[in-house]
Amino acid sequence: MNLEVGLQQAKSERARAAICDATIAALAEVGYAETSLNRVASMADFSKGAVQHHFPTKEDLIAATLDTLLLRTVQSRIAEPKSVEDALLEAWQRFINTPAYRALMEVLNAARTDAALRQRISSDLVDWGKKLDQQSLARYQSVSGNAEDVVMLLNMTRSFMRGLLIQEQYGVTAATTLNYVRKWIELIAPLLKLSEQSVSR
Amino acid sequence: MNLEVGLQQAKSERARAAICDATIAALAEVGYAETSLNRVASMADFSKGAVQHHFPTKEDLIAATLDTLLLRTVQSRIAEPKSVEDALLEAWQRFINTPAYRALMEVLNAARTDAALRQRISSDLVDWGKKLDQQSLARYQSVSGNAEDVVMLLNMTRSFMRGLLIQEQYGVTAATTLNYVRKWIELIAPLLKLSEQSVSR
DNA sequence: AAAAAAAAGCCGGCCATAAGGTTTTTTTAT
DNA sequence: ATAAAAAAACCTTATGGCCGGCTTTTTTTT
Image (cartoon, rainbow over all chains, first blue to last red; front, side, top):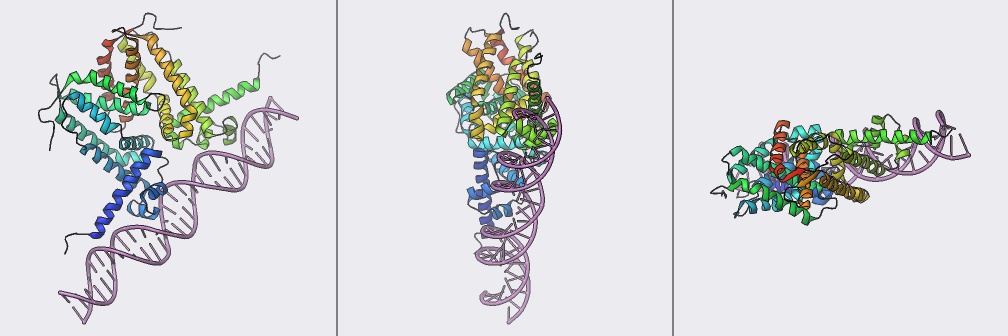
């Protein structure tokens, strides 16, 4: 009767996932500095000891959370886009302008000044960047025929959207922000076209 | 003999400026969370008591520092630009890609999740945004003749550059980043032209 | 005497460790 | 093969060291 190989392992896995989810929520809501073990524990409905059992140090917790975050953003599939414009707008609405991406930015920002954390996560981030580039190449083509342009334009778009998230706070309405996104797309889209089979199953 | 109206006042003013400078450096180097009164005091070569005399609470310190930061970035004059391209590149190199701007972003990011701080600084930030918009209008014109476009394009440029600062950390070289900047300038420069008297003395 | 600066002390929250207790898995012995 | 024993994993609670922010008190300067 070993259908469920590792009842305990499964439980453990569930616990780790729940804790990482709570960490993401905390990062998005209160930022990196306030994302304490205490807070994460109470948000995940575990004791602090449980959290520390699964993730001995805070760095471990953050690194693990970042991994699930990166994985999630890469795996997020976009419904068959009709046009480049649609695809980019979707990217903003369902990929960047989300709590999860805000959590990601909190970690990135923290890593800027925390050398240990930066070292710990940098290789993951580099891999992630490469995956995103591959994804760009798979989904888009440059009208100029230059593959490098595709990667560049998509990275620029992500940069722009990240920048929007920061500006967001001071007197710029969501509608204005959306206008900026549309304008950006208007400028960029003519340089791109969708690949034939843009949906990879 | 009141030639020096407030000798003490002047000294106090100098102390405040030095403390704010130290705060900016701390924000840029170690981030918002680690910018403690202790650290600022030691960096500015004052006692903690002195810092707290001038800025009773951390919020006061941050708010004052932000003010000098905003003032400084607005006042930063750009040497008579030869072209739109030059002007935008200068904006990146001497305005955005600087420790001071990084310090500013630390405050902005902290304000996202710190309601009290956000409330405290929001009006300053809104004013700052307006000043930047005015500056954009004074320096640039849209080839379409539409003034709104100028404001929008310049704000988009700032967003994009902010986003570049974040990406900076993970495996993207400074040269690549500069390439992105150039590409963006290449895209939007044709939509803008310099105003006649772009230098307001 | 008033303002500025320095020093000292308190409070609270953070991360980390360690000592139990409970549940699951593995090993051993019959 | 199966039941008991041992080991391991999981989780809780308690504890301690540390540090940042705030307040109060003392000293220095003007």
